[in-house]
Length: 210
Image (cartoon, rainbow, N blue to C red; front, side, top):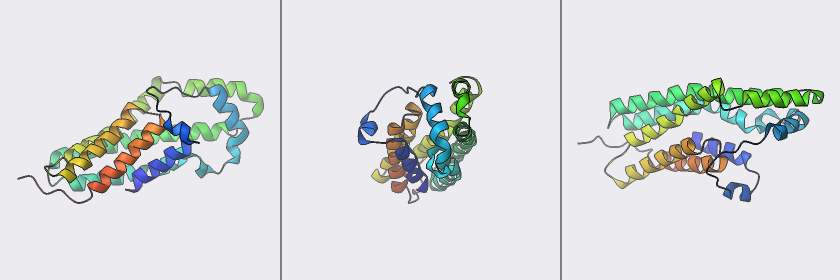
């Protein structure tokens, strides 16, 4: 349960006000590099490392593996093969998710130490490196497998009783919000809360199907 709790913290750190949280958009519109880069150069180096939500998410990556294993332990009694495949999907996605978070922490950390006289070059470099194409797009796409795996693990837990179905619905819905609204922090915060609820409900092992 620690994973969704930390994800809630990470996305809450991205949101500075209640109106910002309530601004649910259907499409992600990235902040222009011309706004991000000068701010990072001016203020980024002054912030403690753990004040960057990307760093917290990066350090929390082992919890994806722990969560995948915990869900596998819950689901293998009912559907062992499907549970193992879903767990493996989460593990593979987590590898690429680590690359994605690693890139963002490197981008933000590096820009914080750029000389202010080089701001124009830094803006152009950041825009090119974070554009949704090439290696960045590939890494982002493969990172989503972590949440595909969580959704599949939720489906494995589907059962006949209401508790199992509520747990499945919450886990699948939470993962689906991540996949559908990638980079939209308020949607992903809601998704994290659904994952938390789903995992909490599903903590007791399901009885094998008869």
